[in-house]
Length: 346
Length: 275
Image (cartoon, rainbow over all chains, first blue to last red; front, side, top):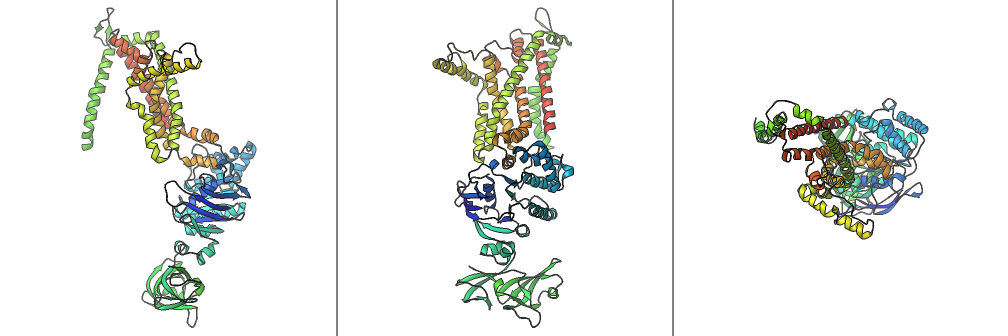
């Protein structure tokens, strides 16, 4: 749990981390998601004790650890560069944390073997990190962090050094391992797919603050702020005016939306999968005619860029859908729910 | 082609200023000295045999090696905390601190020795303090003997050790120490288990470089030894300019050169092994 955690770097105008508070349930995985420089890594380093906070508290399992040095915090950290000890074998790397905690040799050997088996590297126990591939190094780093059974597992962009194909594989492995061990974990990433795919909770960060802390589904479907709507996922963006309670005027169209108490100039966001063609005779809360400007075929998904009376919008269709055969210049009838149109003050 | 032409001046200077004198020295070392002390043109290894057969030569060699090894060890050990501090310092201070560490190189060796005399002499800073505090009743002899030479040589070698260690430790990722800390290692255990083993190649390189420099040191043993300290370099000087036995001086110089080349070869082998 974090309470109003703050960190200022000397000689900078705005704090790198500006009063962050959050609570993380036992056994869950939290993703800190944001662009570079948003303070996510600084937050992680403060939790690990590698960076002193200028304010706020860090509480783990009811214990205030804010003032503790890193070696007394019982955290497992996986660094972006892995930071494996180059002069020690994979097994010695994994055993290092146990050794520092004074675990007896016999038990240490058993637990290192267990950790090696957990990440499937039993045969490579004797290898030095320099003789391991990127994916193997990553697994050693993970095993090393997990072996001492930390209260909290902290991962700093653990996948960024891997190539795209391996990244997905390791991503699922980390998630499976975390769930199997019931470990509570915090994961820093700038990759929204990673965050959405792995985490139980996602905290979207921007300029040292948390913009939204929610489940991946809520973050994606119901972005709470304009920043979240633009940073996470794609969306068609419509400049609009509030026309009345629950109504807004975008271009030549009047649309139903959840407008709350907003007034005046706004901006509305619509995710591509919410904008779907309507079959003959079907109705929707909002209906628009769209002329196809561009069609992008990626196999599983066909993305249409459409010119509608409300403005330019994007629609993602399943590759096999009938409407996905639409060609540039065709006109489709499209619909979407009022709740799917996210409106923010401009 | 132009690249090779640009090399020409350096090659010319090296050939004229280094290779030619060394060749000349090698030639002289093959000459003989008559019983009257005159040099006799010859092509023999008699002088080498005479120098190598002299017990005093081996005593000198042992003195020199012990002095150089001790001072190199001390210089490397003293430079390590300096290099560690510079590595841990904020980036904008690193340049200034590095410059300070190697600043002694900007002062001539002779001037530095004079400075040491003011500090280590019988009425120097240290003895004045010891006498005033009542820790000693007579001045402690800190100069014009082996102690003085050891102190002076260690100090003159330190900047080189710093230079090597700053470069060597700079490549050491600080994340490794952070990782050790998160795994429960205290600062001292992190140092012993992570920093020190990884710094070993740099420490070895610093030791070997300062050892080689210490073996060939002349000014410090000459000026701070007060005529009581004899090493190979001072003996070569005495043979050449006091005894005027050029073949013997040349032979000893050639032997020293050989030993130093061997030490350098060892250094590069060690460097390759640990890289």
